[in-house]
Length: 204
Image 1 (cartoon, rainbow, N blue to C red):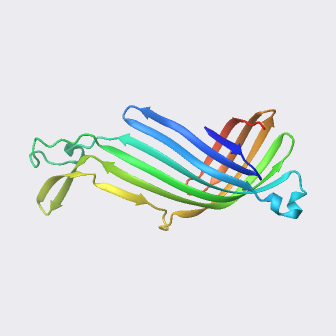
Image 2 (image 1 turned 180 degrees about the horizontal axis):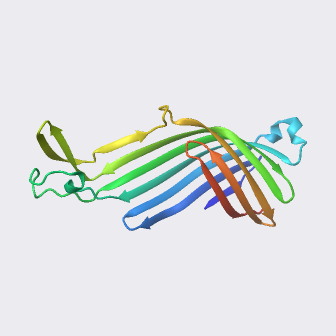
Image 3 (image 1 turned 90 degrees about the vertical axis):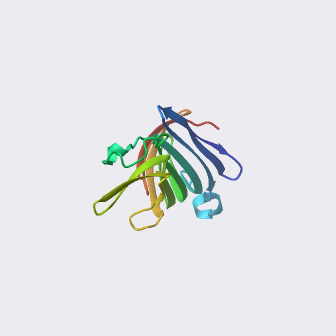
C-alpha cells in the first residue's frame, strides 16, 4: 500500500507499507516514509507552463526478511564423535535488513489522460546479513579436525563491489488516468533496480 496526503504549498507526505507476510517459519515486511515538495512555484519561467511539474523528494524505506534454515554437522561433512551428543543446532535463521534513503529531483508532464514522469537522484542503501542461532563450525589443522558450536556466527554489512553504499538513482515511467483510477508502469535503476506496475486511486 502506498499513499500520499497533500499539504500546503505543493508539499506532500507519502507512506508505503506492506504487512508482514508469514509463510511457515519465514517472514517478509516493509515500510517507508517520504516528503515531496513542488519547486515549480518558485521558478517564474516554469510556473507559466501548466503541464510541466518539477519537485524534490526524499524518502526512507526499510525491508526485513527472516528465513528459517537448518545446518547440522552432517550437512557440512563434520565427522561424528567429534562433538558432544548434547549439542543442539536449533532456532537457526538468516536475517536480512535493508535500509534505503533516497533524494531525487522529479519532473513530469501531465496531459489529460497520460502523465510521463522521470527522476534523477541518489540512493544510499545498507544491507545487513545475520545468521542467528547455534551453528556447527569445522576447523582443520593438518590431520586434526575439530567441531565447534558458535552462536550467531555472522553479522556483516553487504556493500557494492566498489565498497560504497551510495549510488545514482534514475527513474522513468508512465501513468494513465481514468477518472479517479490510475494505472502506472515504471522502471528504477539504482543499487537494486526494479520494474513496477500499480493500480491506484487519486482524488482531490
